[in-house]
Length: 124
Image 1 (cartoon, rainbow, N blue to C red):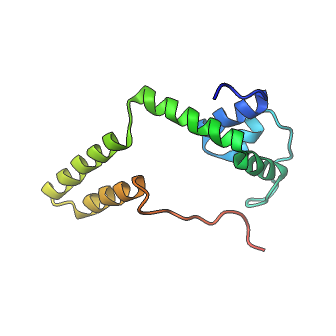
Image 2: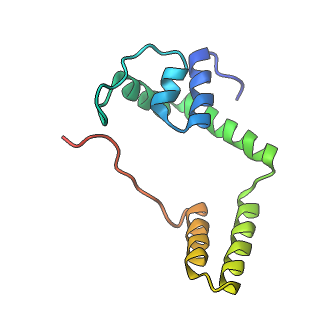
């Protein structure tokens, strides 16, 4: 997929990958919004960013950009799994059970056997 036709959408996708925070990517993309006055307050930036993240075009573009970054870094799921297995074996050799468990958990997350769930937003 080529660059998105809407320049703000393209900037949003790139900023989201860079920053990892949808609200700030939305603001950095050039959308004019009021920032929160209190921690945890939902604003138009949160709503707009959420809407963009659910967009098929944005989702496809994010996947494409992530693949391009991974390709540049020569990172594949298999290479990451191999590195994590090396780390796990080294941790066992060094009798570092915590590090071994961390490597095992990371492998499980990478292959999709373990999903981390986080609650976002304020409860009402």
